Length: 372
Image 1 (cartoon, rainbow, N blue to C red):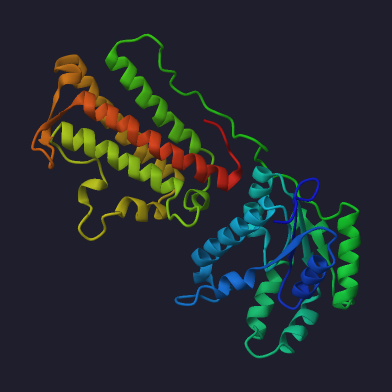
Image 2 (tube, one colour):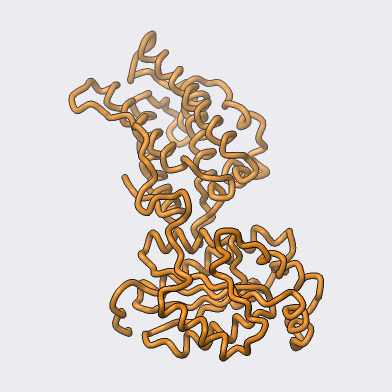
């Protein structure tokens, strides 16, 4: 393996609309680099979807595009950890840039973003002259160009490539990069290391068995709340390939687990809504699959309702029942025996501890949040 170059990995994203010359420029930057460098072409990742692929500029391609971007960022990270600089060639608009910025924050990349943006007329003319198999539709080309028309705070990252050939553009970009230009800071509004940790239940060091079990369960519930806090609906629905697990799915799944064990198994009742009306025979993973349709507020409210209902069952057992020896109404399908509350609480702590490990990885991949 090539030795790692001194300093952090340099990741340069060369973007812009179709017809901007980014593929030629990106290749030139990679080939002329003075350090071990990999050229990553996002088109290769889109073309890897050989069945069921959707043209990435169509509205219905949103889910596919997010998956591809995640795969590209993961590949860039793998090369960077292996000691290579990376040049990314692709249509990477500001709407997907935070994936790269979060990874750069997490892994310490020296991240640069270059948008080659010729005038609209030049981009359309270049597109019309492309060969067979390439995007040539004027309406699609115009729509892609329009997506880069107003970059807001990223305007300093744009370079008008209308009057330059590819070689000249590459020289201009290389000189700017060498001078420290086009660099990107950490994601806006997100700290570089950890999202502020909220107060979590602190299990006492010397307490009775029931208090110890309950406070450790509350500690893990609070951990999941923290790991899913401050995220948008899109972020809560973002998986970490190859797994399809998401933080939103975790919230909804653990709400279901809470409801099933306490409301159903312990008490013999029905799950909290909406789990009480689900056709589980049609989709055994309904809570995971449906979470993407729920807003962050809906997911958190559902989780909190399920936890509150579970706590009422525990409170009743401790205050008026047999405490941790309280037996469940529903029996084990494996042995035919009832569960006691002690077993259920230990199982819930185990369930949360395992899934909070998943949540650690998912959240770090989204915005770099770390912490136990």
